[in-house]
Amino acid sequence: MKVLIVGSGGREHAIAAAVAKSRKVEKIYCAPGNAGIGQIAECVNIGAMEFDRLVAFAKEKEIDLTVVGMDDPLVGGIVDKFEAAGLEVFGPRKNAAILEGSKAFSKDLMKKYNIPTASYENFDTPKAAMEYLETSKYPIVLKADGLALGKGVLICNTKEEAMEGVRELMLDKKFGDAGNTIVIEEFMTGREVSVLSFVDGKTIKIMTSAQDHKRAQDGDKGLNTGGMGTFSPSPFYTKEVDAYCKKYIYQATVDAMAKEGREFKGIIFFGLMLTEEGPKVLEYNARFGDPEAQVVLPRMKNDIVEVFEACIHQTLDQIDLQFEDNAAVCVVLASDGYPVSYEKGFEIKGLETFKDKEDYYVFHAGTKMQDGKIVTNGGRVLGVTAKGKDLKQARANAYKAVEWIDFDNKYMRKDIGKAIDEA
Ligand code: AMP
Ligand code: GLY
Image 1 (tube, rainbow, N blue to C red):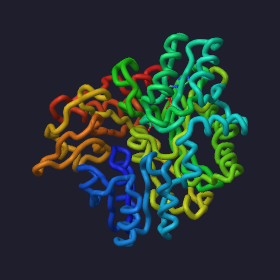
Image 2: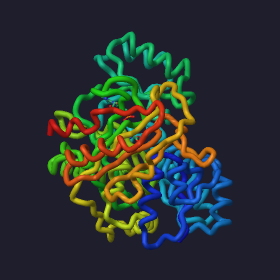
Image 3: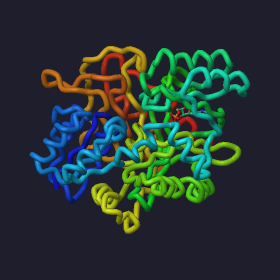
Image 4: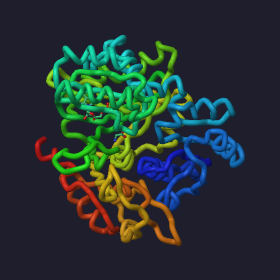
């Protein structure tokens, strides 16, 4: 089979690495890809939003399966385009990707189908939002309805902060049209867990759990980022939590989407908060998490292409999804200054150390080839993942492996997986 992967980050590198292990696959293409993906796939210089060019490429190369890693093309309807051209593609259609594309939609869905989540109201004018804030309890959470690179969530401690937040989102349009509507919701406390799943429209199969570290600095300080590191499994995702989510959240979400005429095929990523009242949904994503994929996929035993095909052909009930009985930790190596401003173009040294080491992975996020050398080309540069027999061992291995890599302005959090010690 020939497989095309759409995207260019650490997540797509982790997907490509899993696809490369499939017995069924003889050739992988990635659009646009990056320097690391280029070592296992042929990268093609087509952007993830250039749907017509991607379709034309897939036809020309007789691609058997396209896998879309990123949210933007999914929400923009890339799957519909491929299907209309008679091409096999993994991911939700536009009318289902709205589960991630509109937070107002997802909140209304959860309310309608009694899926546990924070209480909330949706607003499409700043005036109504500000009136509501006059009598709210603080802290409170403001969310831009649309996609905002994971940055459209504001936690406001006071009324003044919240009013300023409404101005930023709805009047200054900090995230463009994503802020035309906002969700204002109750502030919750608890541990966060990411649970990814495969869905075929009817059946849902849950992957092993993970936890992300979204803030830029140690101790969960600093700005929100795309994710600075992950570990899997989460020791806080207990059997009880799993049973509760299976009963009230996972299948309920899939069934709700089907009832709404928005059959969901692809990945549903449940961002959960384990509150005192039980697990609640913080958000849905319609794709693998990044860097969650970088700890979950290396632990998956199945042939991922078979699972993708089962989702497309609605035979997921026949798949026995299995994960290794070990643990993995991913530490993101970023450019100092991320997520605000940073320099690019520095040579990355030490990548070859990973070549013949089982249980160690270096996934490229922001890298490119320049004059025969691999150089930094983004805020998040690499994800260094290591497995171990348990979380502590995996963490020690990951922090050993980050030392193999060197580039100017290398920055990482030193406390990825610290929560393990509290479990
Ligand atoms: P989201 O993009 O909706 O997952 O939000 C990003 C981050 O904001 C989450 O990972 C949480 O840390 C935080 N957050 C979102 N919603 C809430 C909430 N209702 N209460 C507390 N924290 C929240
Ligand atoms: N790591 C969070 C996300 O992928 O949205």
